[in-house]
Amino acid sequence: MTKIILDELNKTKSDLRTLLVDAQEACRLCLHIIGGEGDSNKMVEKVLSLEANSDMETIRIIEHLSNIVGKLFLAGVLKRAVVCDAVVVHELESMLDIMQHVAVNWLKLVESDPESIYDETKILLDSMLQNCVVMLEKTVDILDGEDVNGHALSFIQEIDQNINSANYTAHENLLSQSGDRRKIIRLIRIVKHIENLGDKIKSVASYLLYIRTGEFIEI
Image 1 (spheres, rainbow, N blue to C red):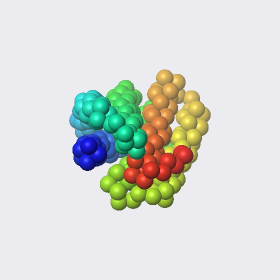
Image 2: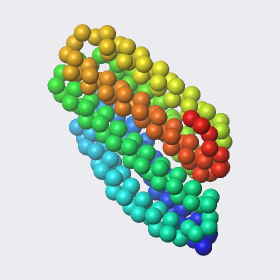
Image 3: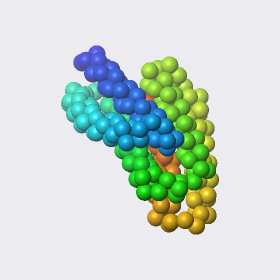
């Protein structure tokens, strides 16, 4: 029975990796959209497609995990692994939701009034998203078992601090502006979404590390 369950969890691991890679792609697309590189409309459509796919994948994976739970009678460690996988799936779905909001709202801003977007805000958003990409890459390493230790999570936490610092600076800059308040608020929401993205990645990395090592590190 234990071998059957472990085989099933290995399938889930592969599915989680697919979602993480999709999150990386969506994050890179958001970088290109904010940087004004390529066809923004097509890239936004791609982000929306990735988000829609994540919704379907989440339903399928959760159903798969529910089936595994029905087989768990005595393996407490395996039960915890299933619960952690379920949390990770929902967090990954939230990441794609966040990037959908970032992409769509940025495109609306650009289409309504390109001049309303401040260069310093674009630079900070670019930095925040670049850091998110690095965090996601390290999280994939944890999932793959290539970097399974507390140092990996510490590295992710340090990068998240950079994102938090950029978030604070962006808020200060935007609140000091005297332009259209509605557009400023939309920019602040975009900044906050990306700051939340960093928190989600950090949470996923922590759960994945716990699944692989049995050690839960407070973040």
